[in-house]
Amino acid sequence: MTWAYWREDIDMAEMGLVDVPTFASRLYHGYTQYAKTLAEILPAAQKPRIAPVNLAFLLIHEENYSFWKNNLFGEDNFHPSPSGTYLAGCVIHATIFGQLPIHPPTLDMTIDSLWGKARAMQFSGEDLDLPTEDEALYLRWIAGRVVFDGDFPESLSLEEETQ
Image 1 (cartoon, rainbow, N blue to C red):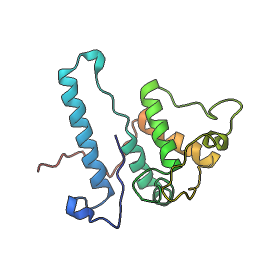
Image 2 (cartoon, rainbow, N blue to C red):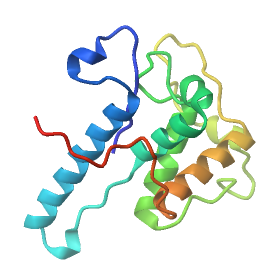
Image 3 (cartoon, rainbow, N blue to C red):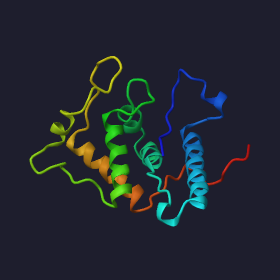
Image 4 (cartoon, rainbow, N blue to C red):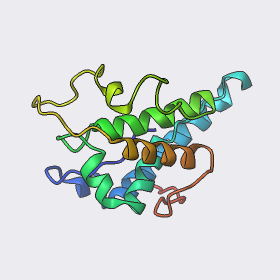
């Protein structure tokens, strides 16, 4: 489940998106409806699972707006930054494997060395800040809350809009 974002250079209201929680709610309902439809036609062994990356991003939007705005997105305010990528990876890993990735990634690796093997992620070639050790632990904690503890953002609308 992809994340909601907000861009000032696009008329988000024209798309019916008045704020980030509205955007996130629409994504949530779209993904859950798609999974429900697939579940009706697929064998039980192939029941779709949704990695709730959107919910993790929205939880940070609610609880730590400054971090959401300044750390989770790349320079285009759409694609994830290294921190946003790490959060998404933690959520996806937890959804697939039923546990959070080990931290640090290997016994002889620090969080900084993890990024040394990553490809460039910025359009301009400028480096975005990499998550610190504490930020990586925070993002990992958020992923665990969403995937395992069922923490649900309060601003997410559970009411599906009719068009």
